[in-house]
Image: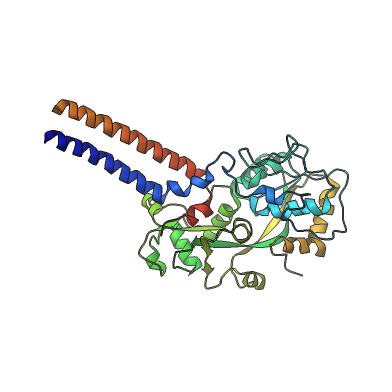
Length: 330
Length: 46
């Protein structure tokens, strides 16, 4: 009888640990699994869908009246803007200007790319890309505005960057499709991320904690969110929030055009859904410009030719064809 | 099983389970840094 009690006690201990680990897997670890292969770590997009000079690539093709030759600018950008700068290469650059280490594209590496050092297309993404443009490793960087740290790095290096607006994009908030909340106000979102509102029931949802998810420092969406929050404290949350219903943010095209995951839904902001119509009309309140960025001391003449084309009707037609929003007409 | 043996076995089981749980937590914390925000929210249990 004593042995049975002892074995029951051991079993109970094991069960307690097993229950904790199973619960943690359900609410947390299991949701990270698909991102965790060697090839997909930090891989934000399926880059092979946006490779120039591949007939099957999902790029915008227009009848461009300009073709670049000579000293070709090296292009780089945020993951969400890969379709834009890859389309620029597709339309303006000569065949063969995108090259790969080993001769062919492979995503079997840390960042999902293997562009050769002489390739005009690179993929450093936002966090590494600002450093690359300041250091002179690339010529044009396609991104949203810089973070304070990125500005500071340029200043420290004595580099002046020129920011040319080339299109517009909406900053959006999203939740799981099963979350019954369909919209929030800007003030509610600021309260949530400041830690002043911690339960969905306070914003018209069920009685469940809110898990305000943030992005890595220096990423385009994190920088945009910092601007949205203004002076409010940001990113503080209870460790138990991880069990709650999440709220996230990103740029519309990244979610709807590139990731296309039907298990999440965009939220209306101040009662306005971020549809193309509402963004173009100006009804949706969070629309910001994205830029082509270059060093002021870069004397490559093709940079200005490329920028002039991007701002021309042809270039803006290409921006629209990638799924982004062209600059407002003067 | 003698009490002394039982407590040794119990201590060993607790130590093993704690080590495995800490490894799980460590893995989760590390993987979270590299995960996609979209997939994290898409797979949320409701």
